[in-house]
Length: 170
Image (tube, rainbow, N blue to C red; front, top):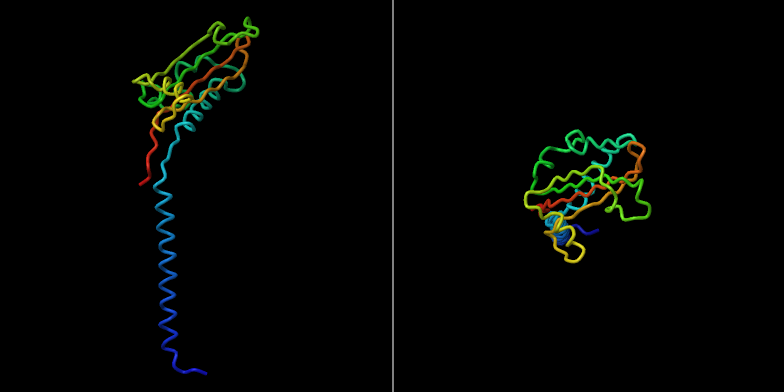
C-alpha cells in the first residue's frame, strides 16, 4: 500500500485538462460549422407556393378559376402578389377538350393571371438555370394538374418562382 500519492494527482489533473480541451474544441468546431453553412430555400419556397396555389384553386376536386384573381383567399400574403421583388407567379387554365395530342400551349386559354416581380427577371433566371448555374439565380417550380371545368377537360398550369436570397446564419 502506497501512502504518498502526490504524483498521481498531478498526472490525473493533466489528463483531465487535456480531455476538457479536446471536448471544448470539438464543440466549438461543430457549432461553427453548423452556423457558417449557407441556407438556400428558393427551390423549396417556389414549390410550396405552387402547391399552395394548386390546392386552393382546385379546392375539393373542382376548379374555382375566380380565385386566380385574388390569391389572398388562398392564404397567400398580399406582399407576394403585389409587385413583389422576390416572387413570380403565373397561373393559366387551358381548354384541352379540342386539343387531342397537341402541345397544351397551343390550346385555347380559358383564363390567365400573372403576378410579376418588379424587375421582371425571375422567370428569365429560372429559364437560364438549366444552362447556367449561379447561387444568385432564381429557382422555379411548375405544377400541371388535369381537371374538369364546366364539362371541359382543363389543364391548370402553375409556374412559381422565388428569388429569396439565402444567407449565412452567422
